Length: 387
Image (cartoon, rainbow, N blue to C red; front, side, top):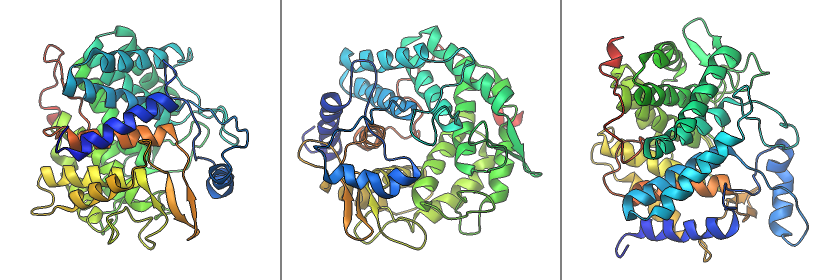
């Protein structure tokens, strides 16, 4: 790790997650989500940490990032403990999957019992990453079970020019491009792992929707058409990486114009200090995992020649590393309402930070989240874009 500040930072953060949030099966801890909590109570809990709190949640998105981070650590160091933790966490997610295949949202006020595309898709991505290494059939079975629920129960919103994934099972109208982008990645992963192109039968319809709603700036809106701007750069950074992963797996270059637009848009996402801007109109507040996501997206854009001669990702990563705390964690946010900060450790976001640091530290990982160490014995898809 000498001379590699990204791996050094990742190692410190990994140790923090083990101490603070890993219970032997999964990452457990608080989360900043929730309308009132996001605006008010998380700051109370940050400034008064001695007060008793019971906000211990298990977010499957966090488990997926933890699995993928451990697999990167295993590839880097070839120590079995990393593989063990990844597979054990995947075992946990498969074990808690309900009979209908649909994991429920953690019991946060206002969202208890919700069924969300993001949670199910990310759980499945984590399970598939583990399956590529462990070949445990129940990991693949659980991912396929969710996808069946996604198609048959969640369904799509027919926008008239393409299909959009539903955000929640109970919400039949809200059109959020972010969930459609990550669902495309899952479609590609399932097709790749199983060798069955049937998983891509709706992929082009989803791509058509994303192409239609992309704005001239390259930005994909948060909610179409009612709310174009919300935490703009971080959401678009994730969508860039999701769509790049989809294209790398399928070789479907029809998404290339979307990626080119996103890359151009993301170039304007850094503050002068190197942090991710809050949105198109405001620099602050500053949220560390947003900076990590934007740094990773910019890095992939540079590696794949979307940004010739640009080195913006280096500035973002360097700024991020300077913000790491002594115990290895990263605070969540600063400059909220100009004067407030949230220094609590949220395992879901810490796992994201870990993964993006490892991606940068492990030179050569250029596939936007496609698992390193891909097993060539698994069936492959050929010329999917010609379907």
